[in-house]
Image 1 (cartoon, rainbow, N blue to C red):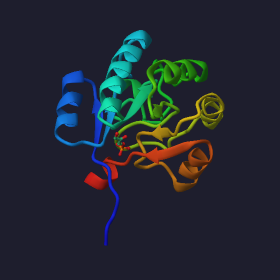
Image 2: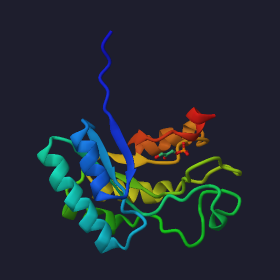
Image 3: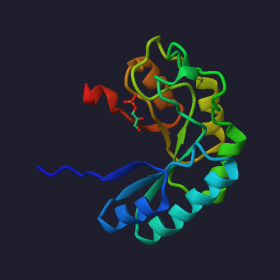
Image 4: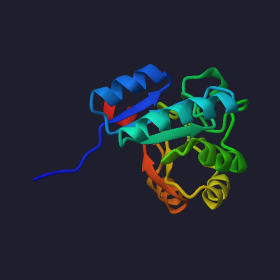
Length: 169
Ligand code: 13P
């Protein structure tokens, strides 16, 4: 049987890496400027969108920062770390309008890696982002998030959930 797939470059922080992926046939790329200041994130992402769209390739952007579970600032891995920026709905609207991304990864309480305590998702924030952002939303840090929480996120506009840790284990 035939299964439609995309070949997606995850978390590309470097423009040249994206160019290499485009040359080698990737059909989807992520421009990850989430650790950059807002204006720098907009610049990197808009530049990637311009090149990728010219090649017919879709681009995922990220606004707000999804940390790693092992990061000291995350503490017990509760998913609501101090000092890490969750996505601001009004900034997300501006980001999408200025960059032209096809999907947007948001920070609403998930972390990459293994949770040590049950994650808490800021579903109100997710709904507020959804109200302002018309494109599909992406949830990174899907491993360990209970199914009913994922369903609640999907009901609020999440169209792609990233899993890596569970697959590796
Ligand atoms: P997990 O570490 O929760 O599997 O998240 C993976 C991820 O978001 C990759 O982009």
